[in-house]
Image 1 (cartoon, helix red, strand yellow):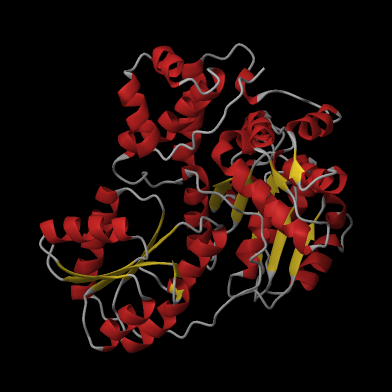
Image 2 (tube, helix red, strand yellow):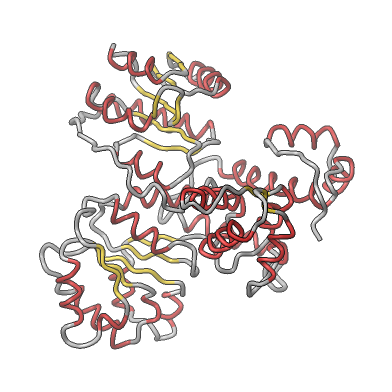
Length: 456
């Protein structure tokens, strides 16, 4: 690589690692913990690439992007952030960031993106673009640092303004309608109507035309389209073949496998291909267990803002929350948290209170039970297939082998520590590794070692 890179991050370790890696690659590096210093360098004409964190002691890196684009058109910016929400990905895309990576990032992957950014700068002629700051929608419970959710966020950001229909797949309660709403609210159609249609809305000769008149040039979402009968599906096909100008953005949600219905003759092939311009798969909550504490904290904060009181989960209570299968997904988790906020007698929510609330809900199924009779390898293969599917027709970023091992290693050690009551000697013996190796992995993976209780 050849060029000067400006690095802005308040984490000294990240600044050191990036400085060393970029210098070895042949770049000159200026690193700072101050957004103000970064902006001064940009104004002075320094740098061929910016790598910036979002939350800085003296400002917000995302909010600085429009100013950077105005001062230095064509200067690429790679955003790195621990703010692992859909808002970060969308705002980065809106502000024309060259790329966005969630923390913790894969260093070889970041280096390859930096090389592409430097090469693009040498070739591109970019016209400045005025970006209006956006604050609405920040309360969307689309929160997650797992690879599956980050891949989904990236895809949502890319398709916001694409003139293609969007099919959103996922179990009930995963947030399909929130994804559709986010695509509309952060697109160029945000000031136009957002209309959600049920099968009943398409009945009669006037049903489709009434929906189009209501949606105008905004967004029209067919809710749970897999439940529509053949006659209703036919009406949608005829509607889509005669869309007015301007036509609404077409989206559809479904919790059933449309391709399977189509093969069984229960879903029209012509409708399937008309709706599936871009397919977004929303993972079930049990497929992204690491996001459960983030979501729970999000709902606790929302309840506090709603005047329901300040609450927090005890360590043992959160262990149980993480171990639950959540058949109702994010919606069930949200309802459970709100109920616990109301019913808990103290500020700290206890394990016993969680057990009581979950015991009164249907379909209790510990996460560790997995599929009925399913081998571990089959379960892993299912999750990996979903991970690849979330990238659409693109391959995941290079370095997949090491990333997958790290994704599995952390939960494995945490669960083993829980199972052995926090006894590291027993845990090391259970895992078949040296105790010193276990300690090093606990440190490297930032596993919080507290007093643990064996899961029953």
